[in-house]
Length: 318
Image (tube, rainbow, N blue to C red; front, side, top):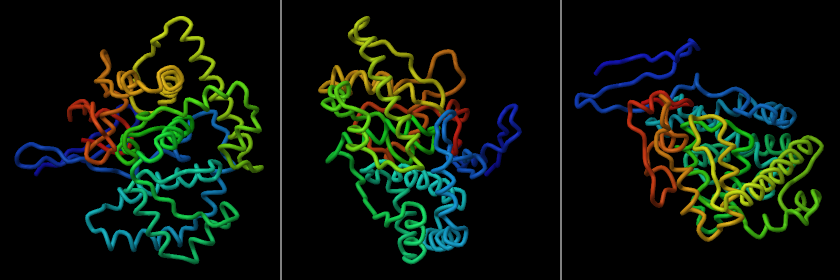
């Protein structure tokens, strides 16, 4: 078994350790050094107050207890993978601070949450300090009963966070379900306060962020309507590498609004794109899905080859 170290070009950071077995197959290895800073929040997202409150509410002692117990019960999970799962759980907690309904869509992330709940007093103290109330466990590992909830989760997630390879692998396929068509049709007649009342929990800490999201939604809907007047089938650039995939949000809004019943027939051309022509990296989606069995995939998916996926960012390497 040979061991190879890959150094990210020009950045000087350790990207991955790749193990080759006797038959030449590769195994992906996670490195916690690749976890983005500040929860991977995109530029211009006004969320520093919420982020600071979250970090201050999760004490080192609490997280370390959870980590030690989890790793002792799951010896197959590496220290690095625990840190990546915790990173995505923090993002989930972040969303819970301002979205009224946020089901849990990842079994991997949910396992860390379950472990936290075992430390009852510490978890209650975290919830109270962060949200001022108990953050109850709300699992929903299959999105089929509420696909529009998953769609809204995906849309908000894409406005806020860098989406890494491990993000796709952990949460399953993004942009697979259409947004609520009736909501999109009513947005023009709904005030900001009415939208807030329907979807968000508004506090002094998150008011600027909620306003930002409402502005994004209105802007994307307006762009979709303008595009429809020019091209009724829509015309979008396919996403390139990992990172800011908020551009796929416009794809979601356009086909949800105009082709709700045929949403996936159209959206999959962009969400499930092959390797981008003329780039050395992978398509935004299926390099990131990792193991197809980990995602909520129900057809049409493609994965990158190991050679092309090695250049994709964010957590995994092959």
